[in-house]
Image (cartoon, rainbow, N blue to C red; front, side, top):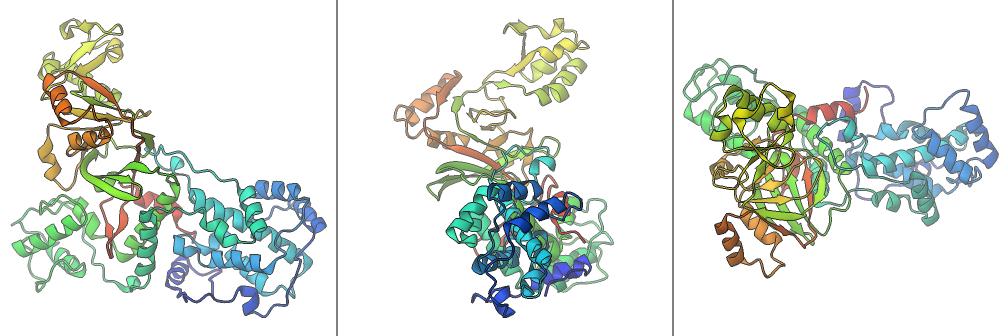
Length: 543
């Protein structure tokens, strides 16, 4: 039974605790032994409905598209076939398997009207016809493009929105007499999305509602050996999460070795910095409850509905919060690389593009944000700043400018190009991989290779640093025999900046997901840009 007017919390619990049988159940009309009704309504009634709602608008999600659909269909009804009605309602009933919500698709009203077809008034069956169409449109729209618009939520979101022709989708479904097939075709097919659905199904089998969740107060950083009154709640929480196996001493306030080892295990599992330090980022992750983790699965299912359906046959995925780059070809993972991504202040954006070319021995042209926030202020404070950083200035004609002759208080300094030549101190290392985009973001090497040993690696200014970037570049050129290892070594040794076009068609996708299935378990990673909670507040059903 659905919950028409209960409090949100109870509704949410019921929604995710409902038990489904693998055997297909009879539909709502069959279950209630409703007499076969060949036609819910007729063209005149539908036309009258749209005349009436001009005066008293009905609660429908897609009034414009529905009116156009019926106008183009001469107002003839389309839900005269009981099997189609049943098929649609079964999809509404099971939509929670996709991480969406029954009440968003007129679920309760359609259930009520389908259950009483024999006794419904003409007006009620007329409304049912319209609600079924509206529900199909809403389901199709959410499955194809997501429930929310990411561009209205996140500044860093640049991936184009998916598109769907709702009217054509319904015409096709009715003509083929298969609602499920039409809706299934709209869902993401990627293995990560399927894994999240599996994780959601398994999660709902657990007693997540009653899982203990000791809360830890935020506060000052706790270092190994120090004492803090929060140590009991920290130890208890680590025990609840399965990381601390010893006896819990409620009187202990010292951050001892056994607690440190348990904490480091937790930090490793969630891709946090494995430093044994108890800071607020680690405490934030310790405080996530089972219900929070359920929300995290639903959040990431929604994000996957935003991503392009066709990622290409050969592509690179950079999962930003997981600090990992994966190369996929024909469905197989070819190679993986650790990455460093943008800091909280200079976030790496989410977008898709295609590899264009590779530059060996690159120079580094300072991007606008760093120029404005770092280089110009640094040079204005210390005339030797640019020399120390090995940065040269160029005017609009490409002529070198002497820093000592620049008025650093003038607006003209913003028009100069600031560039660091190729060399061992260049922050781009010895190679960068370009996929031209509006953000001026690319993959590149780094001289600071030791930083890849850290677990938390949000340390760049927005571009993506790649461990073994030379190996990745070599792979991208592997179809061009003339650029074998000897030739690449020769280019690197010369120190000359060399650009080489990539002839393979390889797409690059910057994605952001904080939960995914890994083997037989669900892995949750740190939401490094704090994007999840804002999305959940918008995604969850209204109370």
